[in-house]
Image (cartoon, rainbow, N blue to C red; front, side):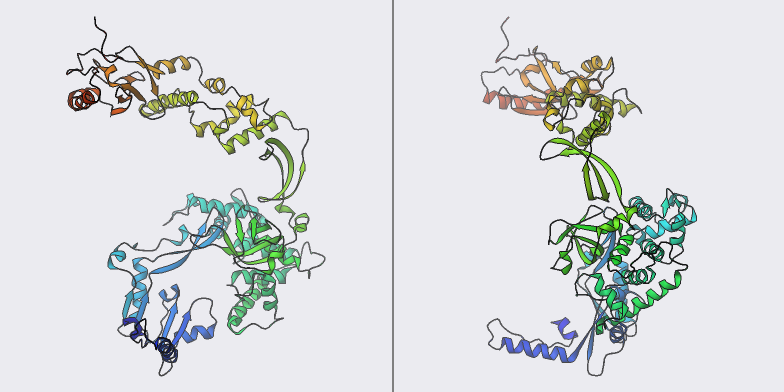
Length: 629
């Protein structure tokens, strides 16, 4: 009610069963509309709409400005006395895994909250209403994180290449994230701007243009193809926010609007004018003549070609005819959230896409149809030929084919014949690496062997920097499949043949002599206990477990050790019914402090069994009672 009064809204106290409920709602809405001027304020507005938000309210009106983070700047709006802060911000975050930016909604920092509150008192006393508690405020970060930690670093990587330096050679307030920087370098290599750490001649030309590397590459290649005007218009459209929001995703319609063939709607005029001005600036940067002009520069397919030059990773193929989902060259998925005319196209290049927090797939906002035949001409550098040897998951057999690929998309494929043994074995190794070691015929005994070796290696590395015991962890074995597994794959031709491998002999060969003998000495399969029984050790956990009936340890003062005394085993002390009654690594302390209570309980449940008062001098037994002498 207080906030409503601040906005000049007269709200009637209406009960749910008030007969005049609808009438009062209409009257309140009319009062609100006549007395309050609602003005949005964000970067996509034209100049007139921005002026309406900034200028003083007309006489007799109260103005409410609905603003984004732009209100945190030094912008001053006359007459603001009240700020209502939701405490949230939509922040672009670059995802190195996808090479795309996505908008995340997150809590603002204390510094931003202070900045927002300051808008209320710029010209006169005011008040700020924060829609969160004081406790929540204390949990906010002091300041927002540096932009370099979440930004696209392609432009930075291009300039560092121009200077001939790497990030490690410079002193930073905030070091660029390694993953994002590697993603940026990979993009520059695909754009032909980077060769190793050095810029190419094309990269030098890109660095001289005041534009993102994607846009710079588009402009230079577009000029070389004799498509400079279209390239500048496309670059301007990509540099501006969408000038035709809500009119479908097809970029062709934006290009027509920019060329002046159609009149822009009133709300889009500002964006169109900015895009035209930016296109003129780009034309001023381009010099020289076309070096490899195309024969039909007016053909609409060149829009898709230019867009693919800027976004080679966003060439997309439809998953099923007429469907909304596409697979991108970078391996990601994208889809139309609503029905669109472009869904008739089997191939697209996507200019603008992204996802919000909690969304799995990317949403397509701007795109253009694409002719894959361009990969045989002006986009041939994006195509790579790969000889692929892999398993047909349905048939369970090895298949070999030569694929023409653009990123992760397959343009064409043809069977390969006459494979050599090395290539064939490598395909089998790749299959194991992808599916995991569980594809091989492991047994519980082999897993115990693996754990025994791992224990001795771990003990060595805990006391010194190296170990004579090899690393036989799953990760290490997967990494070295070529060395220990490939020589034994000659007879494997179907998936089911892996079960025939003598895996025990294969992995045991990883231990050179005399380590197999020392393994049995230091990490034995079984331990002898005072009753005379030989009890199996379980190495699947660390420390190894010795599960033994309590009566079989009478007379044993200390916990058994292995590995030359370096490792104490974990005792699972069992009842006569082989149920755990105690877990310990300190047997002496158990006899001293806990045995009496355990004995009382066991004696009640198993009265016929032998439960001596002093277990250290009693005779151990695997029977109900010791044999009589």
